[in-house]
Length: 181
Image 1 (cartoon, rainbow, N blue to C red):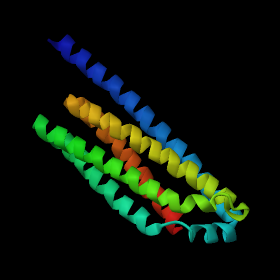
Image 2 (image 1 turned 180 degrees about the vertical axis):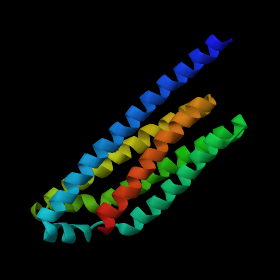
Image 3 (image 1 turned 60 degrees about the vertical axis):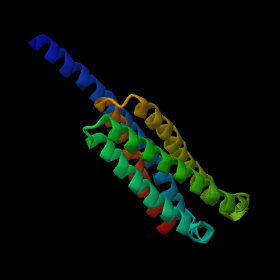
Image 4 (image 1 turned 90 degrees about the vertical axis):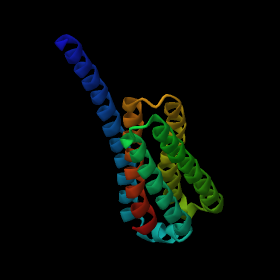
């Protein structure tokens, strides 16, 4: 019996290692992108300040609330004892993630026209790379949450909830750096 427990603990430990490697690689990737944005904003303060005026801070604020509520639902899924509650919370979190995507696409539709302006090219290149990379993560993890909801085992829910929280935290850094800074 001890061997099975030790084997299970080892298997869980391997999964944790892979999870944290993934988490840290995501944080490093976004950290590099945000650092580039900050450096460029120091090198071109006037054009970055003017370019920020073309962003829709109201939609970005709404999206921040949407992701916070979605993260709360992911946490509820992770805490839930009932598989039914886990499933509902994961589906709710995914749906709010897709709402984030829809709002972001509306935001992009108003901002894309400024991307071709030579005075703002650096700003909007980095803006679309950073927020687009984040958006791709939201879409992918939203789909993964829907898949996990079909078979909502506690370990799978914990894994997807952890990754979802990482992407939430990344947005909570992106928002002030790009929209408020």
